[in-house]
Image (cartoon, rainbow, N blue to C red):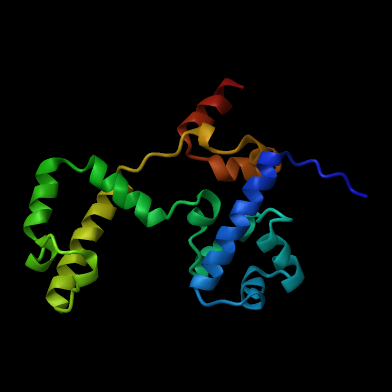
Length: 181
């Protein structure tokens, strides 16, 4: 019998990624067979990704992204656009936020509950989209790389050197560590 050499942390990481992959697949209205075809693997092999028995290879990320899967969410548990929106709100100067707030439709300024909140006017909907896009765009321009410590060491050990370099290229801490060694 083959010995399982993955640590408990790595096993948990794979299980968590597997759950999020399934959520993304279902949210995109795809079957396991359809996603296995997109990823160019057998349905049985894909099932191992979704069960957490196999890690999802990073070389399959583009296929998942092209299929509408939020791969950032699958890996981190955090929605990418949500992160950019939060970064945009946190980092955008108050003056710019106040200017954007002036564009907010009146219906959005109400303190009414979300249950009663509806954007039925296309002009109001477009104004809200514009504001959200502006905040996300600012967040994208000022988004920082996650600290290296937030990336599981066990998950990195499961990768080969090329995959590690590809995964972490651009991460300032990783580049500094590479230069020192």
